[in-house]
Image (cartoon, rainbow, N blue to C red; front, side):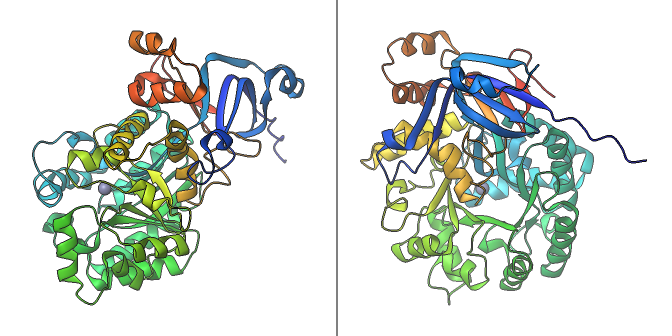
Length: 447
Ligand SMILES: [Zn+2]
């Protein structure tokens, strides 16, 4: 007996839609923004089928479909976090160190606990709930060296229906014994995880060497060998975050022209590669990123917290060789999982460098820019027909102060600016993943 076909599942959201038709670093922000002040989004089986003015689009509403009324709120694509470590959630806000000492003192002891699969499952659940509370629907996530930390993460993401990119950290030197693999074991464990998870139920695997100092050349080469087997795989690592780290890499790899070149020689600089930070890079590196399609993750709250340095966003986005760039929270060095807070700090870093980060540029980075960084712009990052229905609902009046400031807003750009300067998790009224409401502020619970 063949089972009866499942009837399609429809839903619809009404509110002020904000999304993008182009890159606001390469065209005037006002031209890049698409908005519909009283808009309707219709969703069938997890995918957006219609977007437009309510008055016209309502004609396409399948009979009997409930419309969630978010008038007074903005409907945006869900935020995309292009660099974050879920196991570091419990050690957020650790005092006093810069990168290399911070890893030794706080990070490695915390990551040790993920040898315990049950602990990993508990933290994965908490982490994903926090992400959804912040309106983030996709992230590129570092697990730990333990394969069970990856299983725990993808299991919970599958349950929620979120689109996630994640992988087991590779470290075969310059790390404590309890967190070290070997080049071969790292390869074998990654291969098994790829077979188990990659491309299934919205989960995607990223080959994840932590950074050049903690992998031997042999391990980096095997990471490249894994990637060569499947061009749909992702790769994530850290690049040129801190001056002492850059000097160490130059010592460890004396034959490489630059830090990026270390990864390039191993075959790791390619589309779907995301390099965290990229603060101390030169023109040749940026040209190579542009040409190869690899991306940088700008992590403002982390860079400020660890005193790492100032990302040169407007140089990176230079129209003559723009580099794919998204925003990363980099928890636990970052200080908030909210991309509204990432935008806030990105604005201040740009100001210190003499640039104005326009709110349309900031929201683009947090959504469409992140999707392009991951080469997933055909599925996520904009509110348009044919895209996965990963959405967040932003409330510009979430606090009394925001309600007061919002009265002064005379444009959508200004409304977005108040959200990014004053907003945080309280600004997220609801979050949808694959068309399903997975967070609602009113009852603060995931599905
Ligand atoms: Zn990081």
